[in-house]
Image (tube, rainbow, N blue to C red; front, side, top):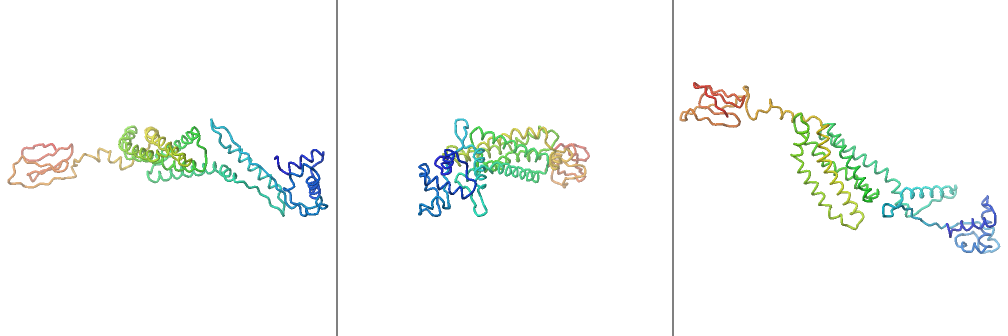
Length: 360
């Protein structure tokens, strides 16, 4: 670099048509000659510390104790639309190349390492891609396991997980359009988006499993009718909670609010639109309990089978023959002691002399 003693020394050698020194003693001697006998070397004398500089006669043959090499950080950028942003790939390459170059100067008795405050942020760029894929992958895997454990259906858990994964892909796409860079702040919010977006899909998937019947379209419609409004209200309240941060001038708050808004908007679309369609096409069978509730043979609307006698037969001496009180669903109280209640077809047959049928 310009202003660097090594660059000035190299220019001096080229003007003298000399090659680079081949050993340490020759380097010390040539450097001393450059600094103390040439006008070009005067500007660099404070950058080199010799072992003995008091005696002018020994300056040319004195051992060099230290050399100060000046360098300048050049920001490597690229154009993203109308905005200039850091070029992470080039910055990582420049940092790694600098480290390799400096480490090649190391000796057994001398350890050299480069340092720059900019390396802190560049080091983050270097590992952020790996951390993004690793953390998001583990989060999605955890979601799949927990959803399967709570719902108990492999197909339903898979469809919910796919819905969440699609939501994350779309969030990343909108982040690119909005100019949100992949950094430590945005990666944290992406991982949080996994937990937020699964909430909207898991409720719909679980409610779908509680609906009996073989018609998947009907089950999906009933699930939306039962819990869709509650899921939408939850998403709305979450959006309102972060909407005030959309106008913040802070990078952290602004990024968080934009990503949360994307998460809520896309999450509710996947939960209320995409997932019901997937369930209507590929949805699994309902829970066994839901099937039993939907089975007509197990649900006679309160009627009693011939084996379930639910009649209370009492004598009412002071009551007329027509006084029949209905209790429960299809159960009757008759004044006749020989009454037999049959719940089939929701009818109560009173076996008296008149053979009257009383519908309940």
